[in-house]
Structures are given as C-alpha cells and as structure tokens.
Image 1: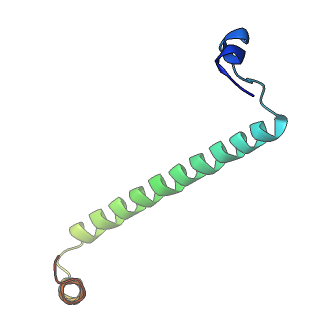
Image 2 (image 1 turned 120 degrees about the vertical axis):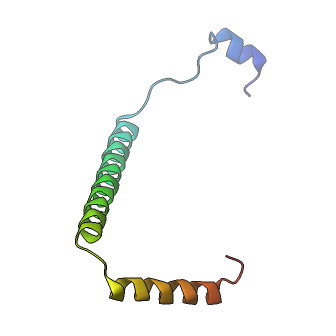
Length: 81
C-alpha cells in the first residue's frame, strides 16, 4: 500500500528509471512530430507560393466564379455561417 509515509521515506522521488522501450517510443514520437511539422510547413510554403503566382498572373474569372459557387453551396449546407 502506498501511503504518505512511503513517499516520505523515498525522499519524494518516484521511479525515475525509464526503460529502453519507452526511450525508443519517445524517439519515434519526436521523429513523427518533426516530420509532421516539416510537411505542414512545406505545405504552407507551397500554398503561399501558389497564391503569389495566382495573384501576379492576373484576374481569373473562372476561379472567381467557382469560388462564388462553392461559397453559395457552403451557405446552403451550413445556413448559420
């Protein structure tokens, strides 16, 4: 039974030893997190570049009409927005 006396006798420290398995999992998690951040950042950069190309290349009536249609459909599907 864990009580206040047990924690006091141990100096207030719990089990600080981590297993090799949990170290591997933590390293894998960090790699996945960094990969996710990298992909997200690259996606933002690509989208920003495409937007700059779109705005520099002039008016695009087809895209404007398409966005109006999408907005109209979105308002029909989600009337509160």
